[in-house]
Picture (tube, rainbow, N blue to C red):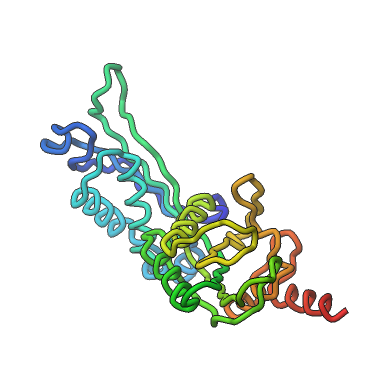
Length: 280
């Protein structure tokens, strides 16, 4: 999401007293902090209707933000800013993104300065995941994997496809798979979302002994917004999703219009193309 294209509400340098810091006296005695926010909110409807309900009340946003920072204590400003950003995104559905700046005017540093602090920007992203299992109670494995994703405070599971039974792909001398697709809204980066997917796999004792071999649970990232990523650890869009009916069929159940950012074809079109190829 390109936040630079979205309207902004500015809240600058609000002083408040709280107990954040790595030193014991900072947590016990507290100190003054300065909070600044940039709220990324489309304002066309609010401006057209002159209606506060169609935007975000900056007074309410400030009050909630300060209360959050006073009710919770963190060692690092980085943690406080990150957790506040996630909290605000959850509190205000109209919010497309937020920048949180936390400054510490009295930081224990042996230099002359006006203030020291951190700035973090967070937004929600739409990602699609593919889940599969062909060992043990396959449905229970998929259910448990989805529940594990739901336990992550930075992941919201929005849609889950029907579970479909499919023959093994690649290495075929193994039991049939049960497959599903899941749509999530997340504040995690692609790399951190990958770690969350691997955590879900590990929760079901996933092992990697045979390439494309049997597994208790497999969780792959198919799409992440319209990003194209190619690193040794992660490739998005998933490089083999267009070859796999067991991926495309569940995807058409929950997001038939989701577009492949390289091929510029949606899930229905990709499945139709794959079916024609298999019929030839």
